[in-house]
Image (cartoon, rainbow, N blue to C red; front, side):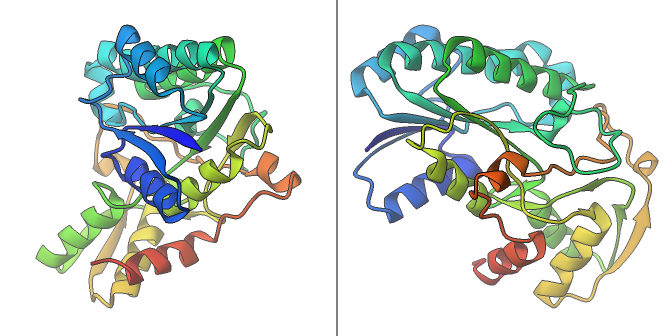
Length: 280
């Protein structure tokens, strides 16, 4: 199988490349944003036409949620026009696309885990641009798998590494307790991305680890697993004003994976335990 991985220098892209290599895939073409700028239509078409991959794993995105508010044009270029360019190129090449989306397509007001058919209502530039990316893919390349995920961590900048860094310098920290979601390891997401490939079961999926918690509870578990004695003070979101509003509740229900017998995600606690155990 021949594959292209975009955004290959990011935490999810690196994990997809690793798992493909571990599975013995020979023709894995990994591109960072400089090597393959998905906002450049001609460049995307040239690369896809030349390599003729069976699948493109699109891990490229503008994920800096706060920056998106002031960098609106680039957010839409990367998160909407980029997927459109990939969709057009892959449709011509008869190539599948596995694309990553986000819980930010919802307004954060739900009271129970959201299925794939829940009404979308993004209220940030990031969420709106990612939703448009989904729409572009569906319009121009029907052979796609779109996976909405949330609270990702892996080898890169994320909440786990931020907490460990803060904990190494402070004995007491403040963490938000009024935002609820599901911490999700990139290992689990990458595994599902690869599993869906060539299944022909195209469509929209929710893919997060199982269960839910607050950022405060997430931080407590991180320090517990690392054996660090850190005092954590629970605070409200108002304590840390941000340009982009954070969803109060963003728990996703892996409904479409589950009913087809394809939900292999671990609980968020087990996935975190495994990740921290293997940290260098």
